[in-house]
Image (cartoon, rainbow, N blue to C red):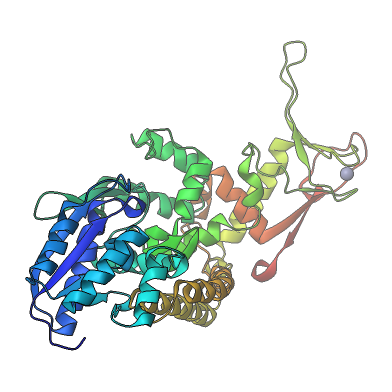
Length: 472
Ligand SMILES: [Zn+2]
C-alpha cells in the first residue's frame, strides 16, 4: 500500500455455508475493527445476501462496490476473507485488474492481500478459487464463533431442565443468539433432587418425586430413574461447559448447584453397588448382601406363591448350593437391631469419616486442571492457539481431569449416616428408605447366614456379622 487510505469500503456477504444474518454482523464487526487497527476511515459498508449461492445470481452491493472503486469514492476494501469478495476465478481476475488500475488497497481479516504483487495475486487466486484453505478457514470461523459465544454468553444445545432459553435480539429486533437463565421452580426442584440423591435416595424415587411435583422432562415426558441419573451427572449444573461430553471450561450461565454438591452427588451415583441396582429395585433388606454360610453365594429372596390359599413367609435362599434357607423377617430383625445398636454408640458419627486434608488437596488438583482448561479455551478464543492445539491440550487434560474427579469422589465425606446416629438412631432408621439402609449395611458390615441342622429353630447366632473398617 503506497499511499495512505482516504476512504475504505467494507464488503460483507452471507454465503450458503454459514447462511445466517449473524454471519454478516460478524464479518462487519471484524472488518470494522481491522479498519480501526489500520487507521483506515470507513466510507461505506456493502452487504450482499446470496444464501442461494447460485453463481448466476446478481450481487447488487458488489456491483455498487465496483462502481465506488471506479469512481474513486473508495480507495481501499476490507473483506473478512477473499472468498467473500469473489466467487469465481473470472470475478477475481476482473477485481485484480480493477485493483491494479486504481491502486486499491485490500485487506482481509486473515492478513493483507496485496494484489499489486505476483505473490499476493497468487495467494488471492488460490484462496478464491482452487483450494480454499478449508482447514485454515474453518478454524478461523470456529475461533470467531467462540469469541462471539464468549462475548454474548451463548450456550450450546437445547436448554436443559432448570433453565429457560432467552433470545438475544439486535437493534433491529433480529435474533442474534440466545442465553440460558435459571428457571427458579425447576432449579429449586433440581437442588432438592441433588440433596436427596446425596442422602441416598434411589433414582427411581427421585423420578417419582419430580413427577409427583408436576415436572416433566424438557421433551414433556415423565421422568425415569435413568433420566434423573443422567441429569444429575450433567457438569453444566455446576457451571461447566462441555463439548461432546467433555468439560472444556467454565460456562457463562449461572450454576444451579455448587461444585461440592455436584461432586458429592457424582460420588454417590458412581458408588459401587449403585451401578448394579439399575434394574429391579430390591424389596428385601439383605437380598444380594447376605452370604450363604455354606458356599459364600449372595442370597436371594424366594417369594412363594400362595399355596392352598395360604401365603407362606418369604425366605432368603442360596441360589448357589440350594441348601440354605432362612425366613426373611427374623433375619432382617436381627440385623436391624444390631445396626441400630451400633449407630447409637457415641463414635457412630465418625464411622464413615474420611481425611479432610486429602479431600482438600484432591479438590485443589481438580480445580487446577479446570483452570488450565479455561486458560486453553481463552487462548483459543484470543487466537493464541489453534483449534488443533486446543483439542490436543484438552485431550491430555481430560484424562487428568477424570482421574482427579475420581480422587475427589474417593475422599468425599460420606453423608450416608447423616441424621442416623446417636440417641434418635432407632427412630431415624425406621424412617430410612430401603435403598439407603442397604447402602449403609454394605458399607458397615459383612453378613453371613450360617448353616444349621434340619429342624433347628432360628436363633440370632445363626447370623454372623463382621464389621468393616472403622466400625469394627
Ligand atoms: Zn450356598
